[in-house]
Image (cartoon, rainbow, N blue to C red; front, side, top):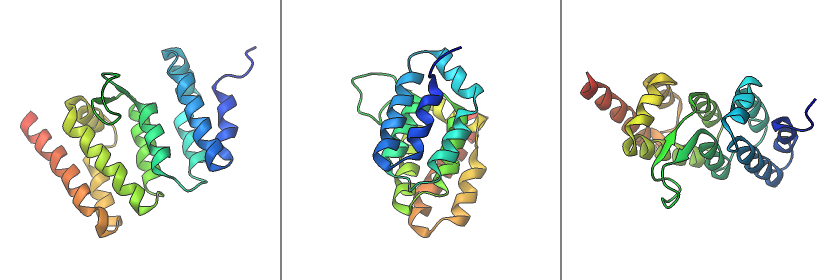
Length: 168
């Protein structure tokens, strides 16, 4: 039987903010080692476990930055963090959307703006979004969010709608 594995990181995510960030970094490092590790994570319902652990704490932009590292990869190591990232885990998009609901307003706005950037940068990201949460998630957020994030959400919906219409 194996000692450790990715489950060893989960208790760190339920401690203080610094330990949570360290635990996420370690987890991402382990999962980036191989597709087998990511397969193990998915088989363990890792995205659901992450939701349960992370939702018990105040979420920060650092938390979401690390989650974007988990669900995407950079096409070029020389690119800035937010440029050229391709989303590769649809389950991770669901995790992001679930966590955004409970994130502080300023963090929500940053995450939505980042998603908008990702959609404009790579058409593959829009396709992954369509296979996952879809446009209706953003429409629901428009109804429940404060007006501060409406403009970003409306931009996201426009981008998704325009892309869908141009693809027909």
